[in-house]
Image 1 (cartoon, rainbow, N blue to C red):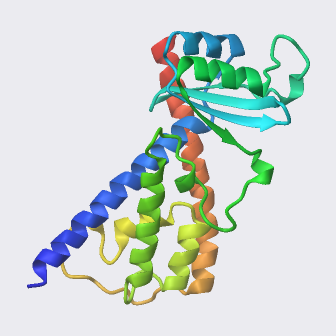
Image 2 (cartoon, rainbow, N blue to C red; image 1 turned 120 degrees about the vertical axis):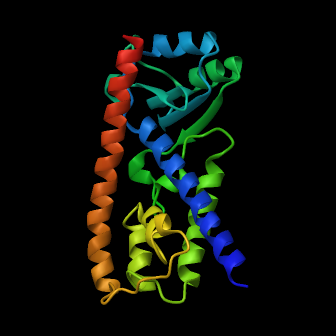
Length: 234
C-alpha cells in the first residue's frame, strides 16, 4: 500500500530537483556575463533581441545593467558608477525606462548589493532572472524546506544541520533532494542508516564550506558560459 506514495514522493523530489538545478544554472549564466556598451544594449533593444533587463540604480543613474537575449545569453554594461557624467557611458534611469518601454522588454530594478539582504536565507532562489517564472524556483525551495522540516529523521544530519545547509550553504536544498532520505539514484531501495549524523554545530561548519563551493561553482559556470558565448559570437 505504501509503494504508490513512495513512488510519488520520489517523483516529487525529482521535479523539485530539476526546478532548483535549472534555476541555479540560469542564475549562474547571468552572474558575470561579457561586457558590452550602452550603444550595443540600445541596438539590441531596437532589434527586438532583448527579453529581460536587470538594472541596478544609484540615485538617478544606472550603476550596472545586465540583459538577456535568451536563457544562455547574457550581457552586461560594465559598472557605470565610475564614469557618471561622461557622455559616452552615463545612462540615466529615465532614459533606460524609456528605452525599455519602447522595446516592450521586461525590466527588473535591483537595489545595490550592500542594501540587499534576506537575512541568513539563500538569496539566489529569490532572484532567478526568468521572465514570469522566477517564483517557481522560490516555491520549489520553500517546498523543499518544508519537506526537510517534515522528515522524521533525516539520514545525514538532524534538522538543525540541514537548516544551516539550506540557508548559509546556498545549495543545501539541492543536496537534500539528492541525498535524503536515500540518494535519488537509488530509487525505492531500502534506506541505509548512517552510523553518525551531523548535529547543528557540525552542519553550520559544513554549510560555510558548501556556501563557498556553491559560489565557486556559480562563477565557474558563468566563466564557461562566457567562453562558449565568445566562441559563438566570435
